[in-house]
Image 1 (cartoon, rainbow, N blue to C red):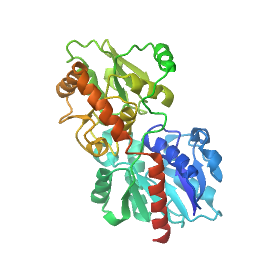
Image 2: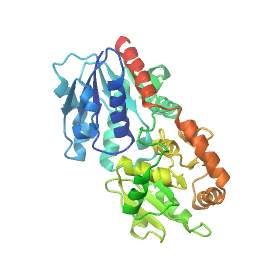
Image 3: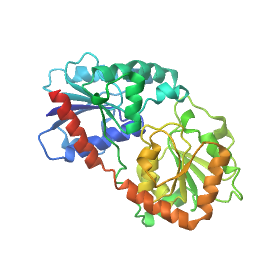
Amino acid sequence: MRVAIGAILGVRGGPARYARELIRALAKMPGSHELTVVCDRASMLNGADQAVKEVIEIPIRHPWEQGLWEERAARALRGKRLDLYHGTKGTLPVFSRVPKVVTVHDLAVFHQPKSFAWLQRLHQKTLVPLAVRIARRVITVSGHARQDVCRTLGIAPTKVIVVPLAADEIFHPAGSSKDEEVLQALRIAAPYILYAGTLQPRKHVEVLVEAYAHLHPPGVPWILVGRRRPGYAPAFLQALPAGVRYLGEVDDDVLAVLYRNALVFCSPSSYEGFGLSFLEAMACGCPVIAPAHSSIPEVLGSAALYVPIVDPGTIANALQQVLSDSRLRARLRQAGLEQARHFSWTHTAERTVAVYREAVHA
């Protein structure tokens, strides 16, 4: 098969990581598939481009260009002999006649619209429903996301296939002396509590900040990591309590060190299509506290300590429980490592190729 993959890599987050790791895993697979990658920033492929036939870079210089990017990708591919085009971020070129597959990570824009800037809402609410209709097959990253796509967008279940994600190989429990060097450079001393993820309304990071004040005694510092969604300026960032630090966005190798050395990872997100940060924490041997909704229980199984509701008191109680019980932390660590082993990018690539074959012959 001759497959073109459209990948927006310059906007960090789950979809960009998915596209990059999928391309890398597909490129390693034996078989007769031939890959062409169209992306906005080729440098973000991190060497995966060495195993593909061709990489075409189409930069995105302004957020409004994202809505037109797939059409520009289709124009760049015009004249090439292709069997399939795969859009990895919920959208597709409308006018291309090549058979198509689209990956829809979640429908948060329909359920949590305040998490998105108005331009993102316009793009996604217009283009995602169109993409799932013109695609021959739709990939979702969890069973919850599949049900959501079928119910919300009215798509036949036979057209939608679940292909889970995985933690990158860089997220593992084996630390080294470099871990201490990284923590010292960041002026962080273990133990600490960790949150990692985009700062946006549906992640409810403000609940974590309020929960911290409920800990008795607070003692253990809380580290917040992740990019801030453009246009989102939460008031809590301007007056963080003593003991809470926001590091902003960090590279994956630094993030892996932070996961490995954290006492516990906690995120009060109100909606997840998969929940990759939870799985990354588990893969690093970090105990996890998580909400019991959307795709999260499906991905984490029995390996997390779940909170039934997301409010400061409930989060603080769960944290107090984990911080004060070393046996509970050890159990969560071991269960998390075992759960993370159920997911691999090799498996993701194999299942994705099977979807490609279905789409080509549909």
